[in-house]
Image (cartoon, rainbow, N blue to C red; front, side, top):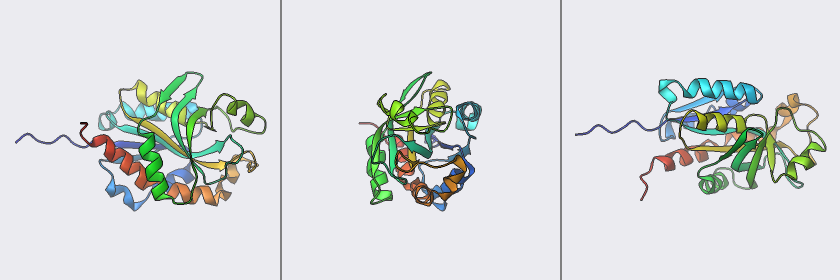
Length: 213
């Protein structure tokens, strides 16, 4: 009998300790394969270093990658606790299409009922977005911004062909701007949402393991 190949692993990447804490849940055993939650540190350079180093190791060489954590909403009407499923991530170095966005939307609606789920481009920056920067980024077509997702997914696909996605929770928005990044700890609504999304991530991962017809 031919032995079955081990299930492909899943790498979930976030930047902050509070994000990693929210993602450390007992549901981990329900994933389709081994799961690693990586805290990359803040900013695109830190994300690129951490993700590249981990994915070039033998254990995670074939891993699917999902970038997550908090983000800045760019569109009027967004609220803390809203979800953003990226159709693509982009920064000055390139654009990376995301895989399985429709399934992620469906599963997030199920995992966090009552929360609004937005879909569209997620843009990368090298600093926390403030004030009029939001409208300038919105004019490019992006619906949300963060510092790590674009670098994470670009690094992931550069280390090998793999499915990638990005799901972020809005922690501030045009009408709900944080005073400083430290007050993310006051984003109770966003934290609670992030704590609830792992089942959706696992369903996304499982779907990648199903045979294609």
